[in-house]
Length: 460
Image 1 (cartoon, rainbow, N blue to C red):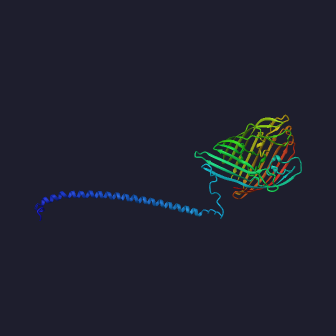
Image 2: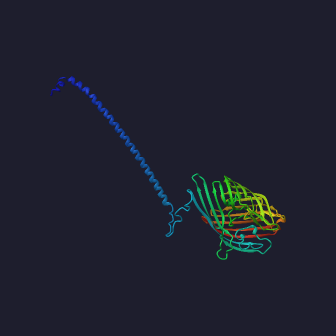
Image 3: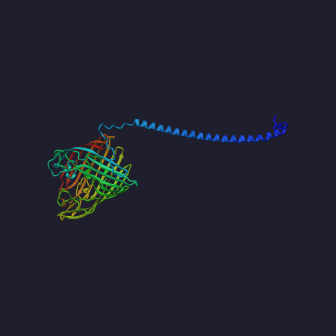
């Protein structure tokens, strides 16, 4: 026993009091450390839980991505393989077709190859070689006068065509379109060797938003309602049909235009002769409004014109105009009815391919407008997705003053035709059409024309 512990042994009460004083401090210190340790453990557990949650979320995303990749690979496996490029052949396009075009420009190319085979019989005379009426129906060229009948067979590919289009959408949302289309209807007497055809400009225009400038269908005309026919026009006698250079503004269903003027004239005592005059000072002014719905389409149009002739015998000006209405009525899924009716003072230039004169010259050299009424109707029936047929009737009546024109001017022209078309493959059409037409002169003479036509067309 040491000297220091001896007093505690000798005094047990003092020792007990000392122990009682020290133990609470020791216990307090141990409790604070335990709490700090527990807090650190809890924080570590929270961080571990966050890491586990993040890992589970990442694993879910990986699983979803793997599923999507599997689905895409399965779809690719089911899709038909792209045809291999034959040895020695290059792809159709390696670089942009329009490398100098503005950004946002797309290019399109289209057209069709059309071959026609026809036999034509006229009752009162022959159609001359190279006449337009040998290749498509021109009512004014139907011979009258009691001459011998004639039968002609013609094969040609004049109405094959191709077109190019360029579309651009700017950063500001402006839309610019350019379009050009040609066929080979240019008249050429070259059947002897190579059957050469001259190129003919059908469309060449540029449009910017609501504005259009260039050559295309006249705003007076609705070309979308023309029925399917082996002949390039169809109901030619009473159909409005014209393409020309113009400036057009369109806002919704309403459009107006100023178009190239031209006057078709029957000279004094000229009979069925029609001459063209381009001396007009005022453009042809048109306005149109279209309606459309599930029932079909309908449109009304009007035109105001100046007629002017200038020659050694006459120099005169007159004014006139015309109105027209037409559309397409959807009867049901397999049938539709298309129609058009027009009337005017000086309408001949816009009918068919210049079917009649706008004005006639009187004995004093003055011009008088010709009252004209024209129309057509066509019924189309689809037998199934590949087979269809159309029957159509067309007519025009002219109110000539025979004191000015003579008795041989056309009084009326009419035709009826029926066809059947079959599409054995996509974009491939074969058809047959039978047509009968009749032209009557002011003196009562008449002539008939009959035509059987077969056609094949491949569109691209």
